[in-house]
Image (cartoon, rainbow, N blue to C red; front, side, top):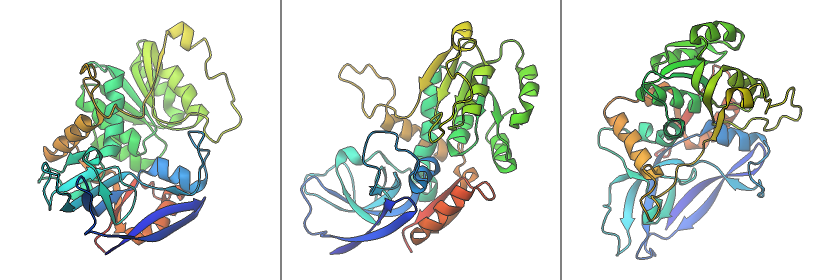
Length: 336
């Protein structure tokens, strides 16, 4: 019998690790038994849940599991599983927990030998920026602005650069600015330097703006920087937890006059549809990200603040919430 540790939020700021038992000798024929090696904190989603931000969907907010960036080792297989092997490292959406059972559909990717488990746990974080780029139709040489340089914003910087965009970024903090330069941004500006950025962009302005925060001020900046027939890709949740709207977020001066397109970004399709109409899906995208890590085209070390024991998750949430030293994400070590 395996004792399983599972992270759960009972209420805002009330994180516990519950214990459960998992019988490794009672697998269904299609079960894949996994032991977590490392899991990454998706700081935006998890810290919002930790601090009690309004839920994104009309569901019961608590209690809730946390985490979805999990790298695990397969330790046992059901009798009908033939496409995986014991000892393989796999990427899954499992929450922060020490062990779990999975099905074939739950395995998102096999980790390449040249990619560490710690780096692989960040693959979905980078995937969100990559998915935004796929939705943006960036052309080679397109001027691109990334507004907000948390982990999703930095993922958008590296994906935009890989797609041939001329990437400019906006942040008020020195640590994310440095990371954005390392990931390929041409220049990085503070929010009080928007007029300087506009002079560089010229009358064309930006073909694509990625906005990653909930701030209405950032939303207005995005509308201002987008050029005619431009696209704004929304990776944040404008207005979430903010009651007062200081301006009209659908102002015709921007949307109508510029003929802007707004693109919400969050999930790639899990699978191609029956007609194979969808060129990209979640598993393909994640395998692409892992291969780019393997080829040293994506450097996850730039967004990993520290590697910590799984039992320090609560302290990690507090540090991410305080934003001291501009932390990006923490990697939980489940081998301790």
